[in-house]
Length: 325
Image (cartoon, rainbow, N blue to C red; front, side, top):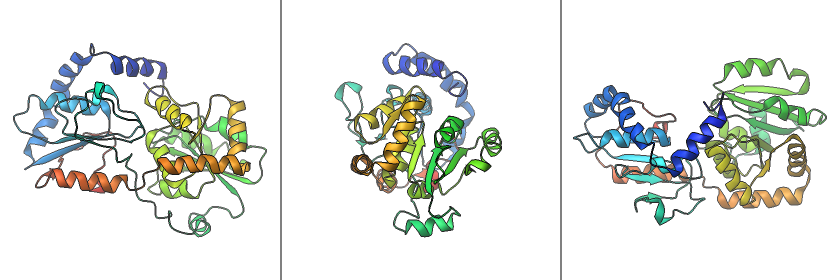
């Protein structure tokens, strides 16, 4: 839906954020979707569940109302704002970005922690950037421009590349996630334009750290990497829904530049690359917001609260955090 008809997703996102009329749908969906998964969960000795997607959290919470076994369920936010659907009495605790204060009218229980969005540890964070660039095979003496489209590889890569085409001093990295179709398409676009296509990689955070600028559509995890690594951010035409909210929050806090068209994109890129005063100002604001130890804090809190429990036996989440446990 997001890749083909984003306007429809925007309507669904906004409607469910304000109205409870659609909640009955989750009752029926939960009964059907988690019939088989539920048995796998109950087979674990003492399971606990981590969810990073509001829809999955709501479905699991709804299903757990009928479960005879008490299972700790935690919602880990990977966007900067908390959506209403994730708020449910069956959720044991919330781990939030901390960028937006939690108001009492939202109905969030007292068991929440504003530790930040969890990202993997960057091996290049404390290292010499030039040495890291050499290890990654990046050219010396070039400005590294990173274009990130999230795990789905959704970004206006060709438009962004076009904005750099007259700049001989840049080297462009296109991160396409799991989207093989986009990867193949871009490989035919850019060899002569100093463009390198990189599919899913475990060193994403390291690449962010050595880049001179990041251009992205405003996925929460990508933005969390950037403000943690203090890499200047240009948000270009964010997707509707949670990504638009992410973009507005960082833009309002002057930690990123939001570009809605090609003219604004070109201006934003030049500002963050060549205007040192402006660049420093945005980096300073990003540094205030960055929470590099979020993953560690979340893990320690979960261990503290679920002593004696075992991780979930079946993967039911869109972006599991199990790799950190």
